[in-house]
Length: 222
Image (cartoon, rainbow, N blue to C red; front, side, top):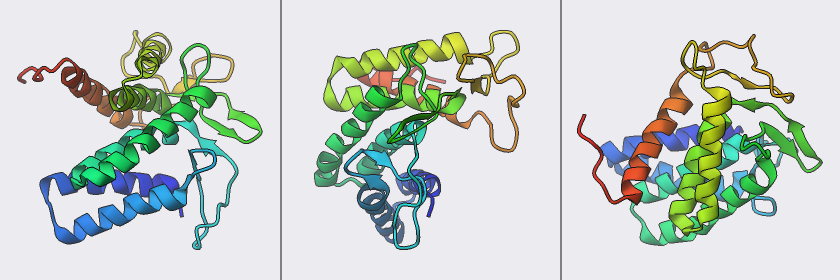
Protein backbone atom coordinates (compact mmCIF):
# COMPACT_ATOMS: atom_id res chain seq x y z
CA UNK A 1 0.00 0.00 0.00
CA UNK A 2 1.20 3.50 -0.81
CA UNK A 3 0.48 6.48 1.41
CA UNK A 4 0.68 8.73 -1.64
CA UNK A 5 -2.10 6.85 -3.41
CA UNK A 6 -4.33 6.76 -0.34
CA UNK A 7 -3.66 10.43 0.45
CA UNK A 8 -4.84 11.58 -2.95
CA UNK A 9 -7.80 9.22 -3.07
CA UNK A 10 -8.82 10.78 0.26
CA UNK A 11 -8.48 14.22 -1.34
CA UNK A 12 -10.55 13.16 -4.35
CA UNK A 13 -13.26 11.58 -2.19
CA UNK A 14 -13.39 14.74 -0.08
CA UNK A 15 -14.04 17.00 -3.04
CA UNK A 16 -16.47 14.57 -4.65
CA UNK A 17 -18.44 14.28 -1.41
CA UNK A 18 -18.76 18.07 -1.23
CA UNK A 19 -20.76 18.06 -4.45
CA UNK A 20 -22.26 14.55 -4.27
CA UNK A 21 -23.14 13.55 -0.68
CA UNK A 22 -23.64 9.87 -1.44
CA UNK A 23 -23.96 7.50 1.52
CA UNK A 24 -21.51 4.91 0.19
CA UNK A 25 -18.99 7.63 -0.67
CA UNK A 26 -19.32 8.99 2.86
CA UNK A 27 -18.56 5.56 4.33
CA UNK A 28 -15.56 5.09 2.07
CA UNK A 29 -14.18 8.54 2.90
CA UNK A 30 -14.70 7.95 6.61
CA UNK A 31 -12.93 4.58 6.37
CA UNK A 32 -10.02 6.10 4.47
CA UNK A 33 -9.59 8.91 6.99
CA UNK A 34 -9.51 6.30 9.75
CA UNK A 35 -6.90 4.18 7.93
CA UNK A 36 -4.72 7.19 7.24
CA UNK A 37 -4.73 8.19 10.90
CA UNK A 38 -4.53 4.75 12.51
CA UNK A 39 -2.47 2.76 10.00
CA UNK A 40 -0.47 5.06 7.75
CA UNK A 41 0.43 7.74 10.29
CA UNK A 42 3.10 6.65 12.76
CA UNK A 43 1.87 7.98 16.14
CA UNK A 44 5.38 7.86 17.60
CA UNK A 45 6.96 10.13 15.01
CA UNK A 46 3.91 11.83 13.39
CA UNK A 47 5.28 10.93 9.96
CA UNK A 48 3.37 9.06 7.28
CA UNK A 49 4.74 5.63 6.50
CA UNK A 50 5.58 5.74 2.80
CA UNK A 51 4.98 2.10 1.87
CA UNK A 52 3.08 -0.60 3.73
CA UNK A 53 2.48 -4.31 3.20
CA UNK A 54 -1.00 -5.73 2.74
CA UNK A 55 -1.15 -6.30 6.50
CA UNK A 56 -0.15 -2.63 7.07
CA UNK A 57 3.38 -3.49 8.22
CA UNK A 58 5.77 -0.62 7.37
CA UNK A 59 8.07 -1.36 4.42
CA UNK A 60 10.25 1.75 4.53
CA UNK A 61 12.10 3.83 7.09
CA UNK A 62 12.11 7.06 5.10
CA UNK A 63 9.42 9.70 5.20
CA UNK A 64 8.42 12.58 2.96
CA UNK A 65 8.16 15.99 4.61
CA UNK A 66 6.05 17.27 1.72
CA UNK A 67 3.48 14.50 2.10
CA UNK A 68 3.42 14.96 5.87
CA UNK A 69 2.59 18.67 5.72
CA UNK A 70 0.18 18.06 2.83
CA UNK A 71 -1.65 15.42 4.85
CA UNK A 72 -1.92 17.78 7.81
CA UNK A 73 -4.27 20.09 5.90
CA UNK A 74 -6.00 17.53 3.68
CA UNK A 75 -6.95 15.65 6.85
CA UNK A 76 -8.71 18.71 8.17
CA UNK A 77 -10.49 19.17 4.85
CA UNK A 78 -11.73 15.57 4.87
CA UNK A 79 -12.97 15.78 8.46
CA UNK A 80 -14.84 19.01 7.81
CA UNK A 81 -16.38 17.65 4.61
CA UNK A 82 -17.78 14.70 6.58
CA UNK A 83 -19.53 17.22 8.85
CA UNK A 84 -18.85 15.35 12.09
CA UNK A 85 -17.98 17.91 14.83
CA UNK A 86 -16.55 15.20 17.10
CA UNK A 87 -14.25 13.96 14.32
CA UNK A 88 -13.15 17.51 13.48
CA UNK A 89 -12.32 18.15 17.15
CA UNK A 90 -10.44 14.84 17.49
CA UNK A 91 -8.32 15.36 14.40
CA UNK A 92 -7.50 19.04 14.95
CA UNK A 93 -4.57 18.33 17.32
CA UNK A 94 -3.38 15.55 15.01
CA UNK A 95 -3.09 17.99 12.11
CA UNK A 96 -1.22 20.51 14.25
CA UNK A 97 1.13 17.86 15.64
CA UNK A 98 2.05 16.70 12.14
CA UNK A 99 2.76 20.29 11.11
CA UNK A 100 4.89 20.79 14.22
CA UNK A 101 7.15 17.85 13.38
CA UNK A 102 7.47 19.00 9.77
CA UNK A 103 8.38 22.47 11.03
CA UNK A 104 11.03 21.20 13.44
CA UNK A 105 12.56 18.44 11.32
CA UNK A 106 11.93 19.30 7.68
CA UNK A 107 12.56 23.02 7.29
CA UNK A 108 15.92 24.43 6.36
CA UNK A 109 17.08 27.75 7.76
CA UNK A 110 16.24 29.45 4.46
CA UNK A 111 12.56 28.50 4.80
CA UNK A 112 12.67 25.69 2.25
CA UNK A 113 11.30 22.22 2.95
CA UNK A 114 13.62 19.26 2.43
CA UNK A 115 12.36 16.37 0.33
CA UNK A 116 12.86 13.33 2.56
CA UNK A 117 14.23 12.22 5.87
CA UNK A 118 14.61 9.13 8.04
CA UNK A 119 15.31 8.37 11.71
CA UNK A 120 18.96 8.96 10.81
CA UNK A 121 18.36 12.50 9.52
CA UNK A 122 17.86 14.20 6.17
CA UNK A 123 18.04 11.74 3.27
CA UNK A 124 17.36 14.06 0.35
CA UNK A 125 18.34 17.66 0.95
CA UNK A 126 16.84 18.82 -2.34
CA UNK A 127 13.84 21.16 -2.22
CA UNK A 128 11.42 20.29 -4.98
CA UNK A 129 8.62 22.65 -5.92
CA UNK A 130 5.69 20.70 -4.52
CA UNK A 131 6.79 20.35 -0.85
CA UNK A 132 7.25 24.13 -0.85
CA UNK A 133 3.71 24.67 -2.14
CA UNK A 134 2.28 22.27 0.45
CA UNK A 135 4.28 23.92 3.23
CA UNK A 136 2.69 27.30 2.62
CA UNK A 137 -0.82 25.83 2.90
CA UNK A 138 -0.01 23.38 5.66
CA UNK A 139 1.53 25.90 8.01
CA UNK A 140 -1.19 28.44 7.31
CA UNK A 141 -3.69 25.71 8.17
CA UNK A 142 -1.84 24.95 11.41
CA UNK A 143 -2.09 28.63 12.31
CA UNK A 144 -5.82 28.62 11.63
CA UNK A 145 -6.29 25.54 13.81
CA UNK A 146 -4.03 26.53 16.70
CA UNK A 147 -3.79 30.33 16.70
CA UNK A 148 -0.04 29.93 17.21
CA UNK A 149 1.61 32.78 15.31
CA UNK A 150 4.78 30.70 14.87
CA UNK A 151 2.97 28.72 12.18
CA UNK A 152 1.93 31.90 10.41
CA UNK A 153 5.52 33.07 10.40
CA UNK A 154 6.62 29.71 9.03
CA UNK A 155 4.03 29.92 6.25
CA UNK A 156 5.36 33.36 5.35
CA UNK A 157 8.93 32.05 5.33
CA UNK A 158 7.86 29.18 3.08
CA UNK A 159 6.24 31.58 0.64
CA UNK A 160 9.29 33.81 0.72
CA UNK A 161 11.44 30.82 -0.27
CA UNK A 162 9.07 30.03 -3.12
CA UNK A 163 9.21 33.59 -4.42
CA UNK A 164 12.97 33.87 -4.12
CA UNK A 165 14.13 30.40 -5.12
CA UNK A 166 11.38 28.46 -6.92
CA UNK A 167 9.41 30.88 -9.12
CA UNK A 168 11.06 31.38 -12.51
CA UNK A 169 10.83 35.14 -12.98
CA UNK A 170 12.30 35.02 -16.47
CA UNK A 171 10.32 32.25 -18.17
CA UNK A 172 7.35 31.74 -15.90
CA UNK A 173 6.01 28.81 -13.88
CA UNK A 174 8.07 27.22 -11.09
CA UNK A 175 11.40 25.47 -11.35
CA UNK A 176 11.37 21.77 -10.50
CA UNK A 177 13.38 22.70 -7.42
CA UNK A 178 16.77 23.32 -5.95
CA UNK A 179 19.36 20.65 -5.24
CA UNK A 180 21.08 20.22 -1.89
CA UNK A 181 23.63 22.88 -2.88
CA UNK A 182 20.94 25.39 -3.81
CA UNK A 183 21.31 25.07 -7.58
CA UNK A 184 18.29 25.07 -9.88
CA UNK A 185 17.46 21.58 -11.14
CA UNK A 186 17.74 22.86 -14.68
CA UNK A 187 17.65 19.43 -16.34
CA UNK A 188 14.25 18.68 -14.88
CA UNK A 189 11.15 19.74 -16.88
CA UNK A 190 8.85 22.64 -16.10
CA UNK A 191 5.94 20.37 -16.97
CA UNK A 192 5.65 16.76 -17.98
CA UNK A 193 4.21 13.38 -17.04
CA UNK A 194 4.69 14.08 -13.33
CA UNK A 195 5.12 17.83 -12.94
CA UNK A 196 2.15 20.06 -13.68
CA UNK A 197 0.56 23.18 -12.12
CA UNK A 198 -1.40 21.04 -9.65
CA UNK A 199 0.45 21.71 -6.40
CA UNK A 200 1.37 25.34 -7.00
CA UNK A 201 -1.98 26.42 -8.48
CA UNK A 202 -3.89 24.67 -5.72
CA UNK A 203 -1.65 26.25 -3.09
CA UNK A 204 -2.30 29.73 -4.44
CA UNK A 205 -6.07 29.17 -4.51
CA UNK A 206 -5.99 27.76 -0.98
CA UNK A 207 -3.95 30.67 0.36
CA UNK A 208 -6.29 33.22 -1.23
CA UNK A 209 -9.33 31.56 0.35
CA UNK A 210 -7.67 31.17 3.74
CA UNK A 211 -6.41 34.74 3.87
CA UNK A 212 -9.92 35.99 3.08
CA UNK A 213 -11.25 33.75 5.86
CA UNK A 214 -8.67 35.05 8.33
CA UNK A 215 -9.57 38.62 7.41
CA UNK A 216 -13.27 37.74 7.50
CA UNK A 217 -13.69 38.89 3.92
CA UNK A 218 -15.49 37.53 0.92
CA UNK A 219 -13.21 36.57 -2.00
CA UNK A 220 -13.27 39.09 -4.82
CA UNK A 221 -15.75 38.32 -7.59
CA UNK A 222 -14.24 36.73 -10.67
